[in-house]
Amino acid sequence: MKEKTLLKNIICISCPAGCSMEALSDGIKILSVSGNQCKKGIKFAEDEIINPIRILTTTVNINSGIVSRLPVRSKTGVPKEKVMQMAAELKKVKAATPVKMGDVILSDILASGIDIISSMSVDK
Amino acid sequence: MEKIHTLQNIKYDLTIIGGGPAGMAAALKASESGIDNILLIERNSFFGGILPQCIHGGFGLKIFNRELTGPEYAQIYIDKLRNSRIKVMPETSALSLFKDDDFIEVITAGKNTGILKIKTKAVILALGCREKTRGQISIPGTRPAGIFTAGFVQKMVNIEGYLPGKDVIILGSGDIGLIMARRLKLEGCNVKGVYEIMPFSTGLSRNISQCLKDFEIPLFLSHTVTNIYGEKRIEAVEISETDWQAGRREVKSGFKKYKVKCDCLILSVGLIPENELSKTCGIDIDNNTGGPLVNEYFQTSAEGIFACGNSLFVNDIADNVTEDGFSAAASAIDFLNKKDGFSISSYSRANIVPGENIAYCVPQKISLLKDVNFKIRARFPLKNALIEFEQINFRQKIKYVMPGELINIKISRDYFKNLPGLSSDLQINTAGSNNLKINNSGASDFKIQTDGRGAVKKQNNTEFGKSFSKIPDITVRIKEST
Image (tube, rainbow over all chains, first blue to last red; front, side, top):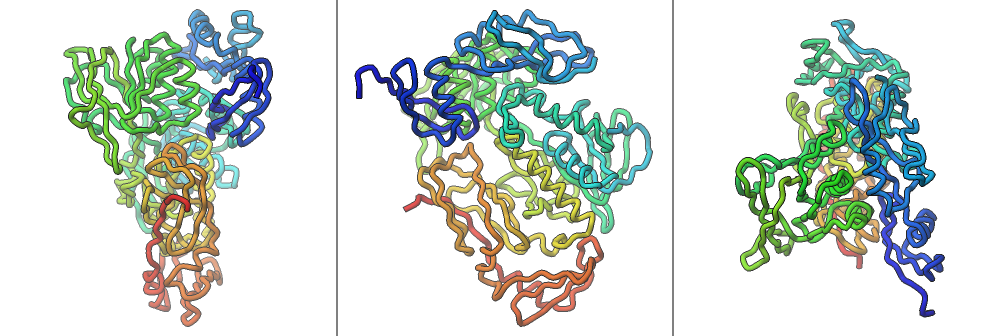
């Protein structure tokens, strides 16, 4: 084994199986992954070494007569280290009804290029 | 869907009680199968059960092959419900069930309907589950404000928009506890730690990773809360290290004990299937699951009353609940259509009994009529495990069993032929909708006449009862694979 290789234990969070994986990398790219049961594991391990991402889910304020909070999520994974900052940013947001599941509630959050979308439909 | 407001048509073919994932699935499946006269009763003003408060991801991987949040998963079924012909009664509680020979009566109390007496041919119970509280785990100490169950906190934060406190301690490392640890951290709370009485977590490993490790929230295994301090508001808890040996967990003298300050204690200490309604008509309950005793048709001990979802046993993932809702509905439809195999006399031809390292196994009863999908909950984690069904010589190796992850085992009905007490092939023939002919030992043929709903009216061979009573209980075990 070369000096620069790095062995990292990773729990795959792609599904409830939660495979316990070992990923060997040179710090820039993945050399090998073991312990995964499917292809999702390899993709997750790659992301986890190079650019760890998470789906952010939280709630925002809404001017509805029915519900007090609107559940929202990031459309795709956001950088892991930005999760707390983005959650704080979303506290400033107030959504307007009617809203459909999948509607963009905040586009391009913190100039990340990622949209925050509604998880629920609210009529009024 | 159509909301019920008045005393219109209170006779239904199928009544489903509970509008969560199990109940919605059951109603939709029954509706798609051509049953027109379906009623869905829901206590809340909205459908989806707990899904709308489960704003995190992880839903739908099995059914939709993509990761959805709880509200998204619910919305898919809510939209289907809106476009269906299912009659719905939101803001209505089912108070009691009464089983007569020919029909089932449901008494309901609703915001728009008052008190109603509904007559129905079949019922599916999809009542969900409830959280264990402080009282059920007997934590000593004062009784201040600031002690909540995790699911209630989830509702407070995600639906109502309130925070339960600032300095938070979580007791119990089940999935809800882990998810609330992350949720409160995101909302700016100081989550001081998750404490688990057992030496392992019952939560999914992915949740330990993404909810605790990602946010540097400490997990203390073999630790529990042994005292609560504070007068008006909780001020601190006493944490004690636990000893865990030979299946016993206890706080021992000489073990570590210390005080941790907090203004909020969140309990994630287990769920219990909700069955107060089931008990009103005397449905037999399994002490291991807390849910009704059912066979592989989701049939309870009361004919025509089926049970599914978390009121049957507490599931790990919503997708499984939805699937069981579909299956329970399929059985209810067969029952309504008077298909074979629905005689209550076949409800319990053999019993499944939990043995070594088994918390429970569902179904607990089998009719021997078809292949069975068993769902098994282990008590303790075990590597290289072997699952064994005694009496039928069924064995299956499993790499790793965890109490937090339900084990699914499919057993072909061919295995049941190995049962002692059944001397030859069990054959079920039907000579007409009302006649069920069973050929057991070869020596004796017997015929059972039913009233069309499955209740036995006449049987021309009294050997029947005897033949099946000889079948011994089937014990399930999880052992180390050698």
